[in-house]
Length: 257
Image 1 (tube, helix red, strand yellow):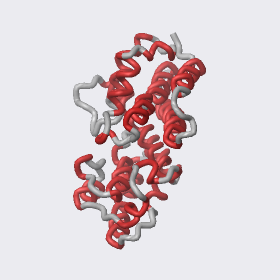
Image 2 (cartoon, rainbow, N blue to C red):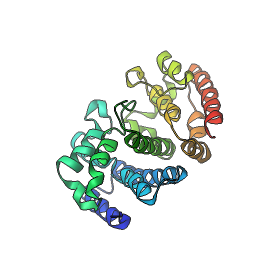
Image 3 (spheres, rainbow, N blue to C red):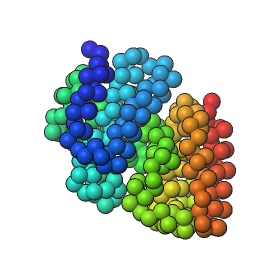
Image 4 (cartoon, rainbow, N blue to C red):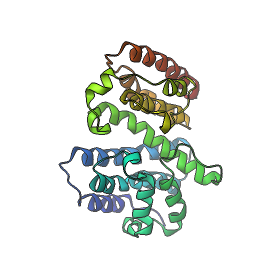
């Protein structure tokens, strides 16, 4: 049984039609959804996967953030720490409430699809995954990270983070966040304290990319450079962003092949 992508898109559009289309955060997540699906498809093709496997990767991108819309309706924020784990909520809406059936996915995909969606936003994947589960979880996570760079550049920061722009311009980057970046690792949530930390942490998502095509996509889009060029009014933050730039450029040059 193959996936009818047009049917799945119609089901997704029907689901999100229940939410306010004029809300900038709703528009943001709809655009993000389709971009992540497309990126997951691109990464899957770069790995020479079968068409069914590429459809699975694409489908995981389409569904990975369905919980974001309900998160916003209930809590008026995308901040998981202040509301709910959106990966778990997405999986619950789809598989515990039975909404997955509307999308026309082969039922045999359900167990792994739930695992991949539930884990797409964890700090690191558990060692208990099978090689197949790990591959598809990593594809989705890579696609999600790549588009987060775009979101940071095309959407006002205050809309993403619910924080005044002035705080981003004046706040410092914490020592622990800088240490994570310079070690070329993604930033632990508990290390983030300031608004500038949030920006640096999103830049550091590049260090979590697993596949060469993912790194190529992230580098070629130019959004990472834009984020690193953020016009901070804090001299120490500007200095630290230059240090982060060096780590990012070194990582990208090593991981595109």
